Each structure stands twice: as C-alpha cells, then as structure tokens.
Amino acid sequence: MSQTNIFVFINIFGGIAVLGSYIVCLMMFPEQREPLWGGVVGTTRNVVVTFMLLAAAGYLTFLYISIFNVSADVFSSKSPLNGNLILILTISFLISSTIWMPASVAFLETSNSLFWYLSVASLWIAALSLVGLLISVTTTDFSTTSNIPKILSVGGLAIITFHCLVFDAIMWVSRFPN
Image 1 (tube, helix red, strand yellow):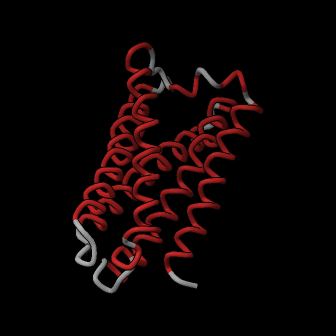
Image 2 (cartoon, rainbow, N blue to C red):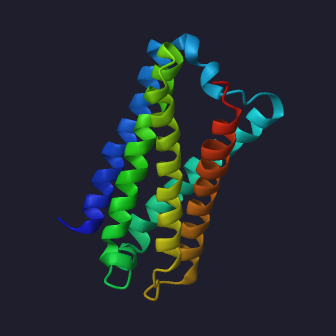
C-alpha cells in the first residue's frame, strides 16, 4: 500500500474518530456543552467559531493537495523521513484530537485531575503535531509542481496550527475554570 493510500486511510478513520468522539460526548452529556467552552464567551467565542471553520477548511486544503496534487512530493524521498514523518504526525494529531473532548467531559463529570491533565496534554500534542506537520510540509521540496499547491498547503496548515495552538492549547486551557 502506498504512503498516499495510508495517509487517506489514516485521515478517513482518524476523522471519523474525532468527529465521532465529539458527537458521542455532545449527545450523551448535553449539560456539558456550555462548560466545554471553558470560559470562552461573547465576541471571543464568535472569533473562535469562525477560526474553527477556517481551520477545518485549511486542513482539508492540506489533505486535498497532499492526496491529489503533490502526493509524490509530500511522500517522496525529498521530504523529511521519506514522508513517514507526515504519517506519524497525522496519526498523533488525530488521536490526540479524539481524546480531548472525552477527557474534558470526564473531568467535568468527575473533577478527577487526571482527566484534566489528559485533556490539556491532548491539546498540546495536537498543536505540536500540527507544528511538526507545518514545518515538514514547509521544508518539503515541491519541485515537481508549481508553488501554488505548496503555498495553499502551508497556508491551510498554518491556519489550523494557529487555531489549535493559540485558541485551544493556550487560550482554552488558561480560561478553563478548573
């Protein structure tokens, strides 16, 4: 199986896991919907929601370009660790993103600090995985295509990285009333 196919597989199943964990938590614990915002309210919440949409679009742009436009470059011998780094960081990002909401709900339900630490760690692992993806894609030689796919891919990753690092790992954690 090619690395591109593995990447697709990781993103399909990882994406289902992330969205599934959110849906299950929000359906089973509707009383935790507001507390999950972690003290982010008003205009700031509107900005965060807008950035969530931009971040999702940014990741999907990176995903599309990696699969359809430049997969030979992203997973070539010219990319860091021959493209394996992209796979490892993507797995790390998606697993940690899957853990965040269940760990946060568990903390809200039990006040067990272990769940708080797991929630915070999952946010930081997701953010740092994205930083690694951003660096990896930025340093990959896209010489077989024009610069536009690389610019769009890096731009998309930059948006989701900013969101996960600034809004989630820093702002949400610092504002969460624990």
